Amino acid sequence: MKVSVSLTPGDRLPVLLERIKRREKYARIRAVLYSLVPVALTVILLDYANSSVRKAQNEVAALKTEATTYTTQIDTLKKNTETYQTQSQSAQGNAENYKNQVTELQAQLTETQKALSEAVSLSRAQRTIDYANPKELASRFPGSEKLLLDILDLRQRRLKWKVGGQSPQEGFDSSSFAMYILKQTRASGIDLRPGESLSEASHSLYDKLTATTKPQTGDLVFYPAGYAMFYFADPQGPFVLGMTPVGITALKSDFAKPVGYRQVQWR
Image 1: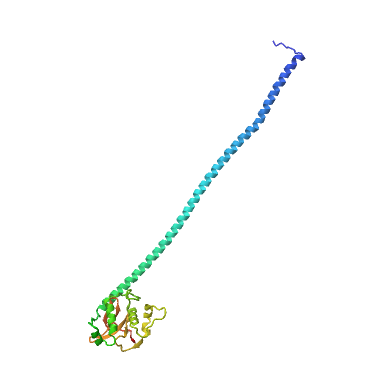
Image 2: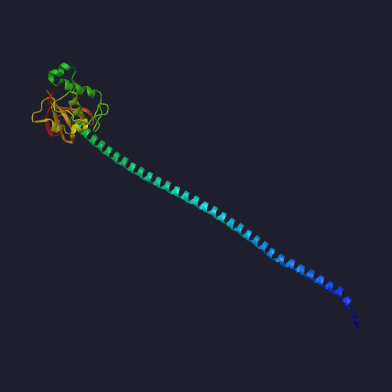
């Protein structure tokens, strides 16, 4: 059975004061807690933001590294492309050079075959000529012994055949050899124009000299294929002397049908 105890106003005052103190204490605690919640949330949000920023920075750094890698790869590809283009151009140049070399070799082969064919043909028309001394030359070829002697001297040096050649060291073709002899012996009417080479002058030799139908010793006889040979005659018959693919050779004058005869005026 519950007994009701009645308190006097004087007894209630301490109880009320105690209740007030407790409520004030709870109120202060709640106020502190309420003030800490935003701070805690702010800290949490800042930490999350910092974490997100660091993650984003790491991702940006990774993207930069990847971009740098791609840039390096692109530069490498560009360099490789330039290298391949250079190599391709070089290969094309080499192919062109090889093509030119093959063309040149084919031309040389054709020229060699032609020279060989001509040599075989010329060998059938060769004339033996070997005069022992100037007196015999003078008796056989009065006035032209020096010409014959000079040509025979060059024959002893075994000059080689060279198309467009311009000197004993380089060699001669038939017309350039004739031009060389005329120039050395100072024949009239064959002076070179300023800047004109021996080979160039030899091409117009046929037109520079006076035509004749009765060649004399020392005149020039022109044949097909560009042969220009000096005319001589001895008791065995007429013959011509000059440069051929087999060297300086004496041939029967009828080894081929002459294109024409040209008179040489010796000084």
